Amino acid sequence: MLSDPSNQAEASVEPIESVGTEVIAPIPIPEYVAELVTRAKAAASRLATLSAAVKDRALLAMAEALEEQKDALLAANELDLEAFGTAPEKKAMADRLRLTDKRIIEMAAGLREVAALPDPLGDMPKMWTRPNGMQVGRVRVPIGVIGIIYESRPNVTADSAALCLKSGNACVLRGGSEAIHSNTAIATVLSEAAEKAGVPAGAITFVARPDRELVPLLLKQDRYIDLIIPRGGESLMRVVTEHATIPVIKHDAGVCHIYVDADADPVMAERVCFNAKVQRPSTCNAVETLLVHQGIARNWLAPFIEKLVEAKVEVRGCPKTCQLSSSAKPASDEDFGKEFLDLTLAVKVVKNVDEAMEHIAKYGSRHTEAIVTSDYPKAMRFLREVDASAVLVNASTRLNDGFQFGLGAEIGISTSRIHARGPMGLEELTCFKFIVLGSGQVRE
Image 1: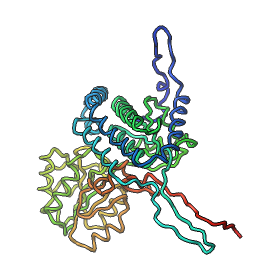
Image 2 (image 1 turned 30 degrees about the horizontal axis):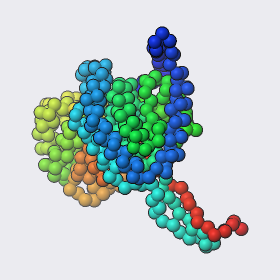
Image 3 (image 1 turned 60 degrees about the vertical axis):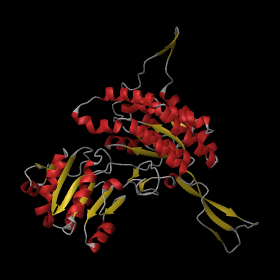
Image 4 (image 1 turned 180 degrees about the horizontal axis):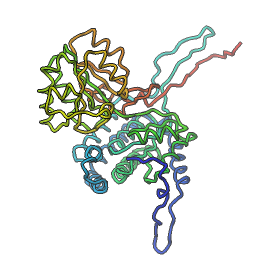
């Protein structure tokens, strides 16, 4: 977990390196950061004009390299897991940190999926002719250099590098210190494979030093970095908010709700809600609070809680929930609005859809919200009035995902309200520039 930079005193002290009899001090942090961002900026201009064929060839080579270096990646990950520890309160984070054969194969598959996607660059939605005869259009281009600051999940290194490469952006990747060995190994494999395939050096730049003061310094490199994408918890978002002089697209906490309406199909509701909590609870789109209409709660809620408990879910319920099920523990005020990232679920019985939406508005993080109902007007109202990056009807919150939405891979789920909101795929990592075709026109 990234720490608050207010506790930085010991972070700048690094061991002195020794080569033979010569003692070499590490590069000072400001010089190290300047070198990284300068290389990335230089690579961005070349990467922007790289052909789709070269980029796709590089992505396929990167996927193959991950599979070939699987044992080395697992060994590096084991170092991180050993250092992280096995305390029960760290279980959810450890799951996000862990690499397995399957997850490495999935990372490689993700790279191949990105290679198979259409190149977004050069797309020109339309051109129009002005009265003076000049033609005006907009063409899709890279953003430039994208800084991505993230925690725990090593697969983010591969996903981010792939999407930035395909969209013509250089990237500066800064993972959390808890995954430093895993991320360094992955980034090294990816960058070496990409450069051999014709990608300019620096296009995939990784910050291989865990110093705490690096992040605030990176956040002020507005001459070199065009966009910052943070992915992590509250402390990371606080650091970014306080220090960034670069535009930011937040990928914030996922306090996701499902509201089960009185008119919900009971079987569907059970399937959707169970999947949203149990399938992979450590992800940001897992449901954290279940809201149940009092009309269906009487017969549906207690048996569903028993199923959750059998799956080792700890249910923390409101007083009405605890009356209906002895397996539910009393919820505290802090349990509503909390991102558990674990097999823990807050449950509240509500009077109607209005109370459910009021609860979501008060406690939600505007990430993913869902309703289970057979009442069409109520579903449409929920879609209109609930504010989130994705609002679903009769579907699991776990489906708020770039691949599931048909966008291909994603760099994360944006909770910001600027040009990209929700899953960020290739198009969301680009912007437009205007082009004009004239025949001597001047402004009168």
